Length: 399
Ligand SMILES: [Zn+2]
Ligand SMILES: [Zn+2]
Image (cartoon, rainbow, N blue to C red; front, side, top):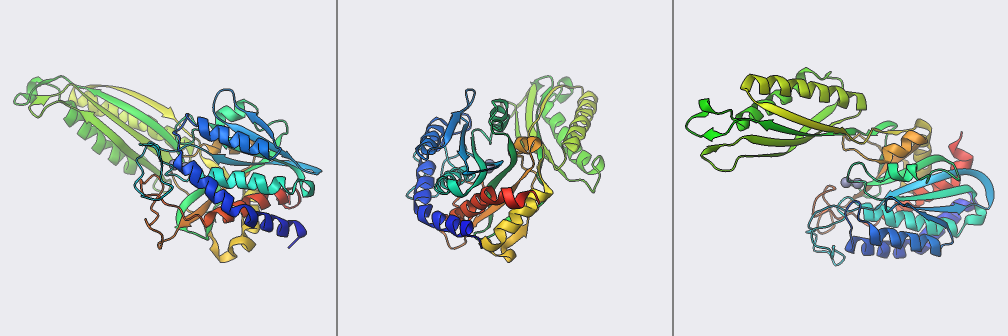
């Protein structure tokens, strides 16, 4: 262990309780994607108070802080997301959301607090650091097109030019563990909206009408079959309809059904191919049923791909912090994450931070659940790993 390692660990322990309190404050005041006004002001003030060079985005609520190290070296970026979800919290905790219908249910409050804590720790050790650390606080991760692209477009990873970028995300895995995998860790997502137009009529005379509900039912079933017949069984992808809407009364054949859904895959090209296949199916089925359709789709976040060297550095640094047996190999998820855009520009890695503890009340459940309750003992673990990544990248990250 070097002197710097010891200093980082001591500094984390000194600010740990403040960071937990900060997280609870953020948790009580959640803001949905694109509306992170208070959070971004709090972040900017905090960074300015530490003496960092602070720059705020003009087109979104993104904030950047740059910490100059005492000695020359590369610039490493650490990134956190700041937005909450449109959910009503059901934890009953003293620090539960004070904003009705909005909740930090994906742990972005934890991410933001951890990164502010790391800024505090590293700024107290600036003289010992080689190179610069760029702290990226991005808005709107949960809502496409996200906040990362806007920050990149506004030059937040330039001047100083970022050489590597790291981030973490809370995960419903045991607290004390982290998990990571090299290559794709979070999949890419395409979103679609499909309108099926039929011809309305009386329920007793379907032959005089074109029933969009029956057509939609066939479309859904045919698309389920498409996923097993058109997709290479060795590739992974998922198609889910999250919404279906149609009809006004039980005895009326309506004239339109709206379906919305997502396709997720570890590979953007698979999403694109499946979207083309989806349109072929929709075209064929609606035509056969005498209906018409309108399909709109957006290719959303690309795949989040961890660089092998950056992944290895995360593992090496996390080893002494959590114990090598607590570094799990992450299964990739098909969820979608706009950190992917940073990784398209510079190499880096995202790792998952375990936040689950079955003894907590309420028992922490999965992200995006109104009872989401991460174990705050994960906070110093996340802080230590990120602080060490920034501090040790210059010497160990380029090996
Ligand atoms: Zn989320
Ligand atoms: Zn998230």
